[in-house]
Image (cartoon, rainbow, N blue to C red; front, side, top):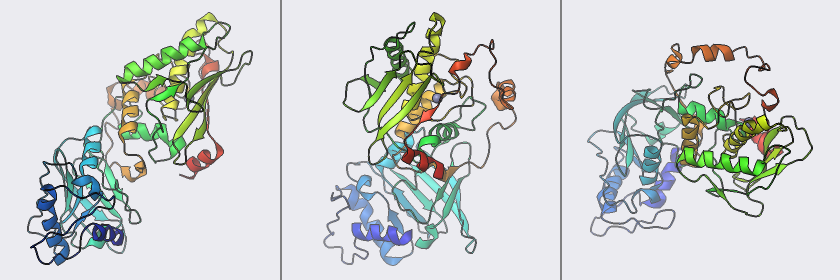
Length: 417
Ligand SMILES: [Zn+2]
């Protein structure tokens, strides 16, 4: 990893800048030039440390760090041999968007290579426009390979693993640990990954277009106006989220479309089908397929709930939840609207940097492992050893356990993980 980091730095900065009479012209890989005075404050420090080897400062995503950040306070390199990895404004904004708080937190690091068992202290400083890591004792750049970072407060942060063979810009992004009410999930990251893994594995992928276009539907079943139900489901998601997630639009071959099959009794009665993605794997076109299963006036509420559920899939929460209070409950929704933490899961997914590998994050402690958060013990017990819902249990059995249809290539990708 480090040769790559060094390469990045070498592109950005001359390795030894002797002679201070004329600062060199720094050009970032994206062609931009750092704006003074910020760059002038930080770069001489970088050069000093890079050039003399007492400490190494690696800049990742350098193009995003300095430009436009007029109030950056450079990290204090101290007079020890700490290794500082600086991340920029984009990473800081992403972290704060995910619920992380500015401030200082203490971690420890250790190498995962069995032949090189080393560890040390780490400090994470999150400012308003800059975050930086200081790794005490990591004097050599090559110690950054295969590093695990563990927070001293595992309630606040997720552990993260820095792989040796990757140098992408998000590798060092800490992720705050957000508690959820559901007794089935350890935290929000657990919920998010459970709901998104079936399609994307651990990789974060966003929609190619936002808000997501939804094609208005005129479909009418024998008892259910599917177009009206779709409109209600769109309103439910937009109002739950507090922002327009879906907007009505007729974009050719893009967005979400309801496909009604009159006269057909489908098993399951409704499902989401991902039909097209772009070259980066972003969804472009999703069909929600519905049949004439909703053939009784009392089925109206089932149809509405099913559409809220399918729109959750369209938001890329492709998995199903273990929690019956979630609209994504695996046996079919028994609630009218997404739970607050499902909404938060959507928010997180949209804010997580695209391409980040969530499989690198973990936790060293479980929250409330036995108390089940004070309210879910009975629920959890009921779900273990689950039997299919019985008629009369308040569930429309024909509605349960819908399916997700994904293109073969995407399916293969998910299965490989
Ligand atoms: Zn489903």
